[in-house]
Each structure stands twice: as C-alpha cells, then as structure tokens.
Image (cartoon, rainbow, N blue to C red; front, top):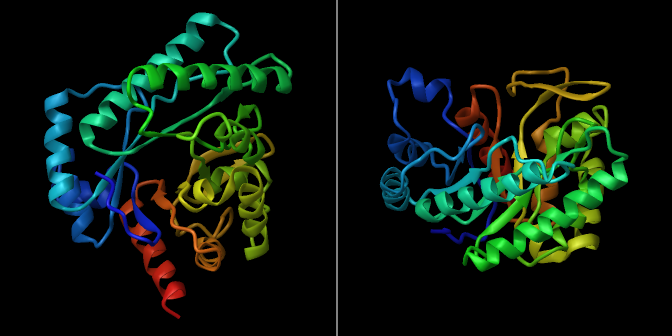
Length: 290
C-alpha cells in the first residue's frame, strides 16, 4: 500500500548493522524497526534472484501495513537489457516480472532495476538495444496486469554501464509507469565527484523536469549514499562518516524543498542505512520547516 504523504519519504535499503546488533534476524521485524525510527520506507533487495514465497512476502506486507511502512524492491543485479545474447535479454524481462510479482505480494508500488552494460558494443548500440528491450518488457508487464506498478531504471555508477541521467530520462519516456531512480552517489561517481553545490543538483532536476515533466520528477525514486570512485566510476559504498568522496546530502535536501519534490529516498550506505536515512529525513524536515 502506498502511503500518500505530500512530503519526501525516507528509509533504509536492506538491513544494517544496528538492526543485527539489536538481535533482529528476520525481515518480518523490519517494518516495526523502521517505524520505530520515524521512517516510512524499506527497500527489499532481490540482488541475487527473486527468492521469496508468497506466504513470507504477505506476512511482511501485513507488518508493513500495520506500521505504515511502504516496501519497494530492487530487481536482480544481473538484469542486462543491453545484452547481445537474446536469451540473456529475455531472462532480464523474466527477472523484472518476477520482481513485480513479489512486489505485488508486498503490496508495494516500485521496483528498481539496473538497465544494462555496454559490453563490447558501441555505446549508442547498447543503449538502443536497452531501450528496445525495456519497451518489450513494458508490454509484457502490461499483459500480466502489473502496469499499475512503477518500474524504475536506475542511474548507474560505472562508465561502462547504461544509466546516465540522460539515458534514464529516455527510458522513462517509454511508458507512463516508468519512473526514474536517481542514485546521486552513482551520478557523482560517473561525474568524477562533481556534485558539490545546490546548483549541481539543480541542473539534474531541471534536466528531468524538461525531459519527463513534473509528475515523474517530483515523485522519483532516489538512492543516496557516499561512494568511493576511480576514473572508471564506482568502487564501493561508504557511510556518511566519509569526508573524501561524497556527495553530501544537504545541497540535495535544499533542492528537494525548493522544487517541492516528494521523492522516495532510500539510504544505501554501507551498514549504516538506518542512521543515515534518519539523518537525511531530519535535515530535510529542518529545511522544509524553516
């Protein structure tokens, strides 16, 4: 169930060290834990494949409804809509539809996916192939009755991956239920650490308003974490303790408020997702209530 609040919502992606240190072992306990921190969202990752029963997912959904926490899911990492191998591209559609079936059991509304990798192809060919396959996936999703759910292509953190801001905007033009997932940590990696000031974030938001309009931009999905990078892009996720790589949340928080955005913001910090999502929520509310 989507809990409509006309503000930005925050929460962790996956369980973190604090959750484990407090003795929690089951995702069934996560919704109450998230609500206990005053947060609204939880992202369940199917990174290594969709392995959950209907019974388990619905039990978690009951806890989520009870605690007014909305669940989103991350589709398997091995999705690659750019693959030149027909079987791999077709399998990618299946991984996405399996994720949507689980999302339905969770009574959530959003699934995030990685669009693909260029491999040995020229970039323009890899993106054209990605776009064709995502369009095909959208048709399959509609035929299965999942087109009331949002599929969110994610901006990616390595230069060889499909998923620049411009590419995600193009994918979001395919169908009404394709919404952007902007991972600002990833964007910062591929831009070599360029996200520093409000203007840097504002340019991305302006580009999205121009490309996909107000509704999809205001209600985008956001992943946020500090990430180590090299000249090839992302290396590993860090925590908010990092002072070297960034990006910092504060300028984005200001931009969210100034533009009246109401995104779902998930922390993907390395082991401190609960604490760091609470930090972002606190800063956002400070800016909002000034």
